Length: 352
Image (cartoon, rainbow, N blue to C red; front, side):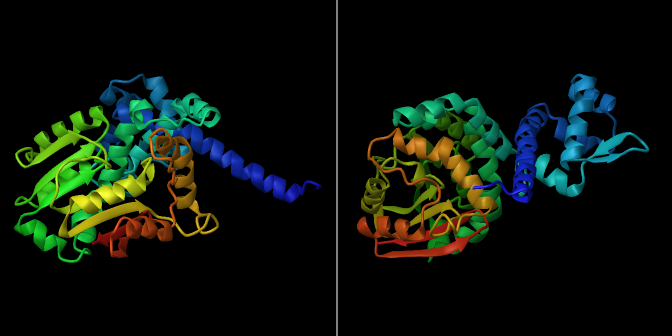
């Protein structure tokens, strides 16, 4: 087939934009880890020398970093004064960790996949997967920092109230398990909102459990929040009023077994809160910016993680709702409904 020159130019233009974005990701992580965004936000309009002094960095490299941010649209610049600053919107995304729009963790994850490229490539040829614990530690920290703002914005204000009777149960006092809890961002947030309930976070990654325990102590909820090493297929306990899985079922090697174990561990009137990435029923439905993010993450993170575990199931990050419903029904659940959603998440209420 002959190459269409116009379409070729358009694709080269697309690729050029992607190349710039890929290179820019590491400048975001550098700026975050060195405190450059925070210093720029606190200082207001400033020049490279002043920002470098505030962040204890080399002025020449800070100048180049500022120019990279400006040309990428990540800061503002005045040619007349030679100063740079963050707009309120840029600050919310790049500098304010308490903002629901804080997204810097996304770039930390992106850069971590580049650090793990050789391991991912080996997974392609071996078929043995790549365990979560085998990734660069930036993936763990980036995941916490990316997902926490979404939980802050939605978990107790939208997702829990959307579940039938769950908010009332938690306010009276309930038993909750958070599976695949990672650093415990969701668990701690729930514990702070519902002081009469008890919470246990489970994750198979010991290093994440250690950090989760630290987060609970820092938040003052360690007296009724504990974290233990266990998988969704074998976590202990029974009679739970609420079991949560936030963006983790598709990473598991045996989601059907996890669903069956959750069913057996729930109280007769309990609820399974299942949060999964936003997705349609087909790859064509997912041909959009959000689907692009999740498929790329699935190549390097989600699918290899599932392949590294026993069970033989590697769902990938873009699981059709019909497939999730089938897993739930086959495990003995009678009710499955989408109770809420965001541009990035589907929230399901699963009941016996």
